[in-house]
Length: 245
Image 1 (cartoon, rainbow, N blue to C red):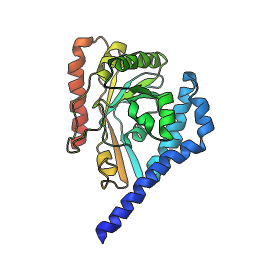
Image 2: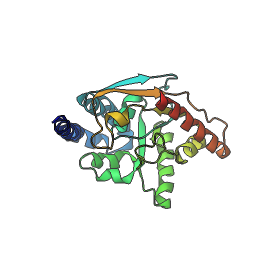
Image 3: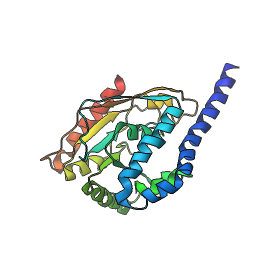
């Protein structure tokens, strides 16, 4: 009986999540359409996404963000924001974690999600990981956004691992190559609770605390491409340490 009740709760809890994702987008559709029509409006689009959309989802689901900061992000400065990727809620939590406007780099498949996907493809940098030309285009678009004073967010595992027992998968090179090219700090963050709070495993979900652990920033000033592996490994170890806590 308890298993049946829990199953019913999970079904409604999952449906509630998708309603929280979609309904605010529908309600604010005209505003979001205007703010996503020009790159110069992106900071205002980001403000709405961070302060309204992400908050509605996080608190509406009963998730309580708890952000543990070390160094602080300086307003107006560009960063490379990275974190482990285990949940659909990672996007909302990353928005909550950074007041500095940033642009997501993510897989093109997310553009197929109804309602959400419409704006995702308008404001995010999409990548087809099976296409070399797509990966090259990502660098050009990211470079343009960095020159506009924005930050970039990449989940360097390249997606959620198929094996849910993996704590932290190997990192791809892209985030670190871009950070070195533009001499911007890498900001490693750990999301230790997201897999338990809203996993891709259907039955694994519950309201509660969601921590963001900021680690010491990794400076790239005066580094060249030969340092890529070193800072990638350093970032992996820092994020992994935060997942053990």
